[in-house]
Image 1 (cartoon, one colour):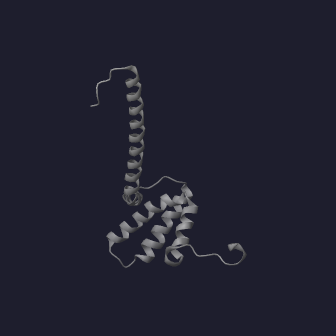
Image 2: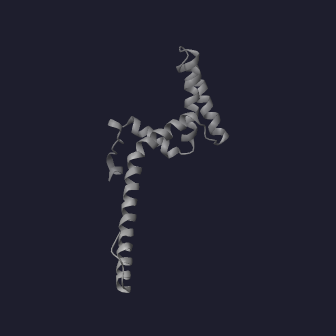
Image 3: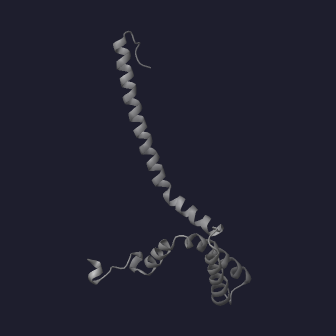
Length: 132
């Protein structure tokens, strides 16, 4: 605790000191909160991805039909035809759920495909006049 306040001038000085202290502590709190958010970002991204595998996002009927045809037709019956029943059931389930989150954002899907086929996970560099 601080010293005893005996005059109005000391009261105003103490009030000013406390306002400065409050501003410093609020700034420190904001910086600490930002640091915590940055530190937890990888865990949040992992949690979001896992949630996308287990939940299905409602979308347009056409998009859902396309996802179902791709997962059941190509993946389940062609790519996984020689595997066990559990694999043939779970893999299309996860594909349908994850793809339902990507259908609403086609530019995000195209960006992921470009990153996948780029060198070292980077976007391929454009050549020619488009690169200017």
